Image (tube, rainbow, N blue to C red; front, side):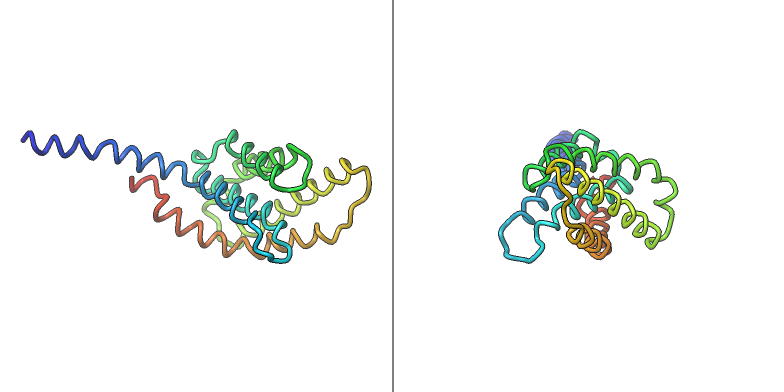
Length: 181
């Protein structure tokens, strides 16, 4: 009898580590992805992937596991995105927080909905976020910037979300599943 209780006690800290790591998985994937995308691979338009990836992660995790990506962590990722990119400091922090807030407001309607609806709403939110980031950059530079990168980033976000969502769904149901801890 004593041996069984000893085994139970020795596995308890590992279960807690497992539960914490599953809870931190959304934040870790977001930060890790931002750093990987920031590496110099020489891919044309690679810098435009950072905000697209951040928006997709914040949107996905806010829909399917809102407790694992609280607002302070989203703001921290937005500030990191601002530091890694060329946008004015704090712009992406505010935009990602707005994206998370709107996603949480629409969550009850989107979670039971079909993927096409989730994708369409993300595409619309990405268009608004990218446009606001462009407007902030224009105001910061005190000049009108070209709109071509704006359209490219919006199309990139619409095109990449399904593949990224498929990977995040696998992670959400597998290694990041809190209920399996």
